[in-house]
Amino acid sequence: MSTTSPDTIVLIHGLWMTPRSWEHWVERFKARGYKVLAPAYPGLEVEVEALREDPSPIEKLTIEETAHHLETVIRGLSSPPILIGHSFGGAMVQILLDRGLGAAGVAIDSVQVKGVLRLPFTTLRATFPILANPANRHRAVPFTHEQFRYAFTNTLTEAQSRAVYERYHVPAPGRFLFDGALANFNPHAATRVDFDKEDRAPLLFIAGSEDNIMPASLNKSNARHYNSGVVAYKEFPGRSHYICGQEGWEEVADHALSWALNPTA
Image (cartoon, rainbow, N blue to C red; front, side, top):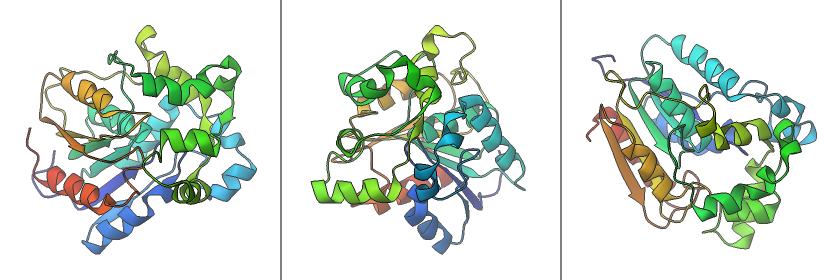
C-alpha cells in the first residue's frame, strides 16, 4: 500500500450491467479531482445496445479471464488505486485485494466468494431462472423486466424500474453464475480468497437492507469470514441491489470514498 492518498478510483461493474452503470459515480468522483476508470469486462467495451444486439462476447467470459484483465489494468497504474465494485464487481474487488492490489477496496452488494455458505431464499429466487437450466452455463442470459425488478429494482416503481432496465440491462454470462454457485464444491474456484491474508488492503462491505439478490445478511456473512486486516461493514436502509443508482446514491458514493481514504474496522 502507498503511504500517499490514492488519486485514482477503479469502478468495477457487476453482471447484467456494463460500465455505463457507473456514469454518475464517474462524474461525481472526477469533480472531486480523482482519475476514474470504469473498465469493462473483456469483450464488453461496446455500448449496451450493441451487446443486446449481439451478446456473443458475453457467452465466452470466465471469472478468471475477467479477474486477470482487471488485474492487468490495475497493475498498469502508477500507484495503487481505490477499488470499488458492485455485485460480482464486489467479488472481483475481493479477488484483486487478495492478489495484493489496491490501496483500499469497497464491495457493494457483493456476490459471495468461495467459503461463504449462507444462501438466502431471495438469492435462490432471483437466480433460479438461470440456474434451473444447465444449458445456460454456456449462454448469455438476460433477465426479463419482471425478473430484473425483483433482483435489482424492487424499491422502485414499475415505470422507474423499466427505465433503468432499458438504459442499463444486458445479458449476463451464465458461466459466472454457475461457477459462482458451485464454488464451494470446487477446490480451485476462481472466487477463492485467503481470509487469513495479513497484508490485504482495507476492505469495506456495503449492503442494502432491501436487496433481494445479494441480501445484507449475505454481505455481512462474507465480511465475517475475514480473520485478518481491516474489514468493515455498512448497511444502508431502504436500498435495493440498484443501490448505486437509486435515489440517494450520492450518500453511498461519498461514504465509500471517505472510508477508503480513512479506513476503520
